[in-house]
Length: 386
Image (cartoon, rainbow, N blue to C red):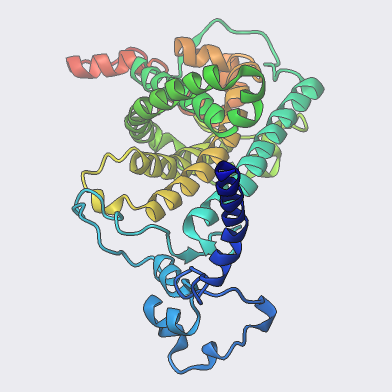
């Protein structure tokens, strides 16, 4: 009997507990002064107060509890807050969110998001599309025209077109460029092409290897580029007859004679625009991304984002031009690859493709055997045939 009484008493207390808790709940709802309200019933009187936009987070809480806009406005301002890390090692440690900017092709938003928009919406799709367009155009041209051949039999008399040093500088630079181009293509487009069928484990390892290789080969390309520019600059000076070559499209579309020196106008444009302009932009931005300058203060997120965009645009344009150069230097023109491989070309090839250069050799202005001429000059003797 007693046991039944206590059981009934316990059951009644359990049923009455929620009601008691509701009756004793704090007036502010237990949320530290923040009360529930219908958002459509909140009057915008607070934003009419003087100095509303300059209020601190504490001041805003008095008129609009729960509104942390001042705090986030300060976070988004790009102004550094307090950080115990030294500025010499971490210059942006106190900046949580970058300031608002508008990069070319992006909306006006935080710099990190603006860079993401430029990369994902412009550089990757349009850059990849441009590379494919150039590749398809070269393929169609080859199918339509075939290899550019020499009209007439070889004479058997050889002219030294490239010395050993020139060929070595070219091949070092070309090898470094191919490694950088292939690794860069995988890093830029591999996530969309290779990752779906390769899987994250293998692709992650491959991307890491290629990124590391890219970073180490970059300085090799930079040094070899300077050597190539210094070596071939003299013979790439533009001449008046280069305008004729350009007007006639180099004789590629119609079989017409086009005058050319040691390098034709197309090769000269490749040298000055593709190698000098785009090459130096790519090297400069790439070395900056490699952080080779011993000054941590310049390596802010904004500077790295700008360097990346410059690097991507210059490299893509450089690759488009070099694809045509590689095509004509290998399968596109008879005798071109052999010239860079052995250093020598037949007189018939030189006369047909570089007649101004050939005429200078015939007149004695330029020696036909440049290596022998230099060796004889070092010995203090007059080269044979001069």
